[in-house]
Image 1: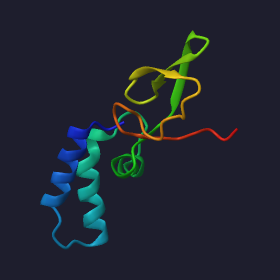
Image 2: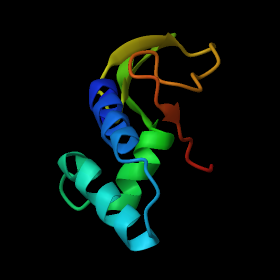
Image 3: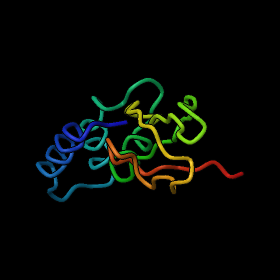
Length: 104
């Protein structure tokens, strides 16, 4: 996931280049502004989607006792213990990414 500071830097670069452009020029500018955030096999579109709506999955890493589950964020790897009777988070308590739930 793209860190908040990196999101802000990309947004600033995009704002600096916000004058009127043709579609081709705009695409080149978007690619240039997001290239540092493109890691591995991420495409420009995936980077833009992460900028707009960062998401994650909750990974259950174990159970600390019969009432508390150990969970981590798939993106920032923040870990927490959650009461099994508590409602699941909609957003990561650390990075703020929207939690995507697998369909059961």
